[in-house]
Image (cartoon, rainbow, N blue to C red; front, side, top):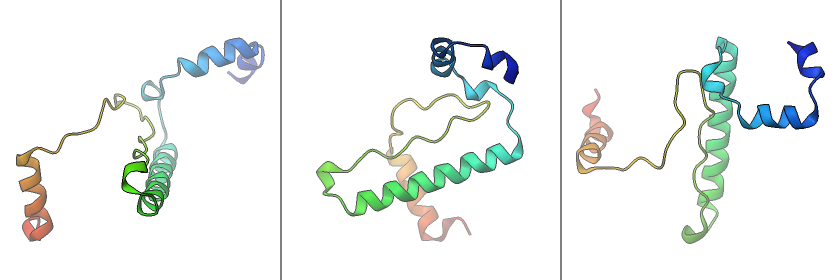
Length: 96
């Protein structure tokens, strides 16, 4: 596979990178753990920015790395009254 990639022009490599679909590839457990670690690191970095930035200028939270079998995220999840009640119950010991 490396030999085939080495023969590609820079334009062809760029085209493959733009059309890449990591969610269709096979990932090992190590790659899954690495993606999870990167997501957590990016989330902590975002939280640090968010608490040290004015509310109106806060950046959007980072999107997780795309993983095999998972479709890309589309928009922000909406907190409904039902899910808010469930979250409130969990925070107040409802999970125990």
